[in-house]
Image (cartoon, rainbow, N blue to C red; front, side, top):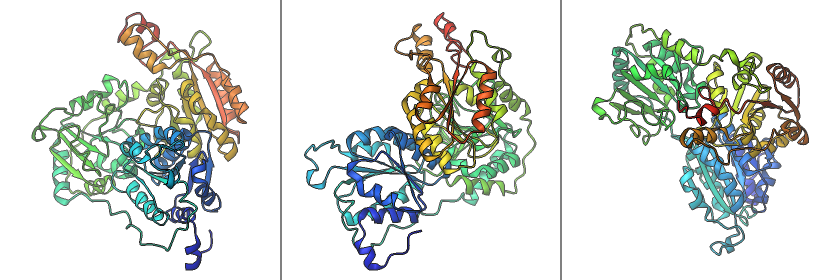
Length: 565
């Protein structure tokens, strides 16, 4: 750790050095960036600290996804830094992801020099306005002696209430100016509210008196896994995981009912359709979680609703579905209070519903011996499930291949899923790099399609340089599969969805200093995966999958022939 500074030393600090010191004191450990000329001193100040790591990435999109993934995995913000117009635009996809995923993140945006502001200077954009809709707070600092204050405020906003990203734009000439005398900083994060005793008792009696109670748990309950299990067991309530939050509840638990994701099978939804009490905890009830806003109980008056909702953000309570009771409370504290309730509940048999979910996760018999020299996507997931440790961190991209992963993988351990609810492509590879840097002792596997891999796969170079021995599994089918599926279903034809190939993605990985392997059969894939697990280098496995197997329930040829499902 750097030695403590005296008052005179503090007066001589640059604004960048003071910010780096504050970040380190707040336990921010990594800054991900593509270095730019408008924040030279900030990058230098972070790089000179022994308690922080400056990670240079190949694209601002990768830097942003890495910072988002670290925040999601740890619950504490990381920093993403980018330069003005083009850099800020490239970073914005990941910042939007952090906003929709409620992930704490601190973003520094280098801006044009103070004297040039407002003149449409080189690469100038109104960054405060640009980032306002995709952050909890965005601002432009115009005085060096106010930069530390703004950073402290940003950290507080990013981590209080519903977490999210904040963006601080800084004219490039400010970072090197004196920080000035230490100032009184904004207060610490306020305590997270608890569930009131009256609310607890009403919820407990309601859950105990219901015939078929279920819980929908989202990312807000990620730190409350133990408490969620206790509540589910005490009130004998089945539990659904919201979209891409499958690790919030152990999937091997007999009360787990499944994942409310894309293409959710009807038999998995049956328990939700039949529920007479639905407790929503830490979920904003997104379009996908609610199955296009069909569940739970849309359009009902609050008094008639079978829904109660607990959320840290008052704006989310009752925003999508009418609720008979809405409580603004921290999920962990609220669930702990419910678990401690003296109210007893009768036994309910959710074994058939749990079995319905289990059946939906089983690969079809033909997956292991798929014809035509192409892998069935189910075979890839099956091989992963057989070889990878249960606590493997899986990062996954957007794309139809992910439907097989979401159904086939069992998330039995906590904090094992990093996946963007925003559906952003290019997430998996950079997210895996960050996860491996944060937890180098764990196996980290990125799962992507060829489309997403070609967007941010160059971050394999970052993985090699930083010693992050990740495994990247690419489902290469030569398509933007999700769009091809929609086109075939809606239009009966496809357009602009083909990707040239098959591409030598294993060779691409080797060109970046990583290992590469190609698999056409389950045996080849299993061998490549075993070798990757034994390697201390990043490895990309190019799994050549059948483009016709477009989703777990449809083929592309069938959709093109008029089988709309």
